[in-house]
Amino acid sequence: MKNTKLTSILIIICISICSCQKKGCTDPNATNYNSQTSKDDGSCEYIQEDYLLTGTLNSDKTLDPTVIWSMQGRVIVPNGVTLTIPAGTIIKSKAGTGANATSLVIARGGKLFAQGTESSPIIMTSESDDISIGSNSGSSLSENVRGLWGGLLILGYAPGSFSGDVIEFQIEGIPASETNGLYGGNNPLDNSGIIQYLSIRHGGAEIGEGNEINGLTLGCVGSATTIDHIEIVGNVDDGIEFFGGTVNASELLVWGQGDDGLDIDQAYSGTISNSMVILNDASDHALEIDGPEGSATGSFTLNNLTLVGTNNECIATGVDGEIADYRKGATGNNLNIFIKNFTSGKDIELDADADALSYKSGNLKFSGFEFSPSNSDGNDCFTTNLTNGSIFNDRSSVGSTFESDGITICNIVSNNSNSVGADESEFSWTYANEKGAL
Image (cartoon, rainbow, N blue to C red; front, side):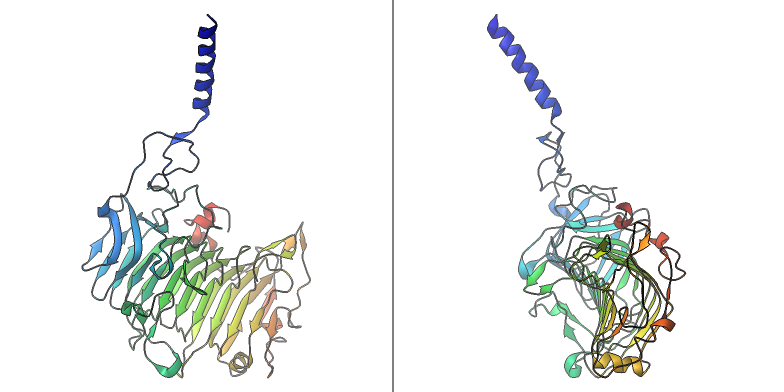
């Protein structure tokens, strides 16, 4: 009789414990892995080899958006080959190590047609992400998880300005032994395809000390290429970096990068418009703008950008958290830029003599800026001064009127009363919007 009672009690305890366990797929290698489950229910689903991207494509390929794709190692779309990624496709990348970090490289002469939509964006993420088909996000990773794979690199035949005045160069993040890593040429109208409504998350794997892959790398991409509605979340290095080229890009959003948000190098000569950079505790500059490296010159345009800083009750957070740095004789036009949520000590710098001289000569221009200082409990964190170098800062030895010109370059506005900057409604489809970062 006692044994019967004991058995009954044990059964009840077991039923209670088992009923509290959340069932689902507990295998991290499965496409439907759920980090919140504690008991496997046999529902795990796995990627078939048919849905694996690896190596160099030898013919045109179109992905099936109804399955989750896996990507492993350096995947190359070479000259003459087209990769088509339909709306709603999810690609989960394996990590790889060092020079073999997983990345997608569109080589010169190759094409990428990745045409997502507002309701069905294309998502490139890590295999650790438990996102499923039809979802915009999973629950296993946040914007603070970085470096789980490489990134997307698009290389073209448009011109750049390189040291030694060579016409082609090896892109950073790809070993010199890989000839499909070359970029540059003489065709400003080069076409690398159409990339729209694409979210790239948790990338930036390091292939060597100080050599990380950007979320999106654009190496001498030509103006016939279409690039708009791109989101980069939680990348170790820069969000998007333009190495030369003439491509125009719009509706870009970078959130929580480990280095710079938008980075320009090697005489990039296109226009970046209607775009946002949102810093967090890991971030360096919102903008890092470099000039030409060779004798060839170029001139970029930045128009209607919104740059969002990070602080905690007026104390700046972040690795550096600066607004912008203009370096190496940068040349271009900066128009209608809204800057908000930066606290005292964060500035826009002319880094050295070459940049001050570029500004004095009229080759580096600024106009239509609006600035809203960080705010805590309804009060501004500091009193903004547009003429003393605290916002517009000339660090050169030759000097310029950049600091005193701040009063004509910029207006002080209250938070969210800006008349310039990005149209944030264009980013309603993003992971950043879903998580409340906008």
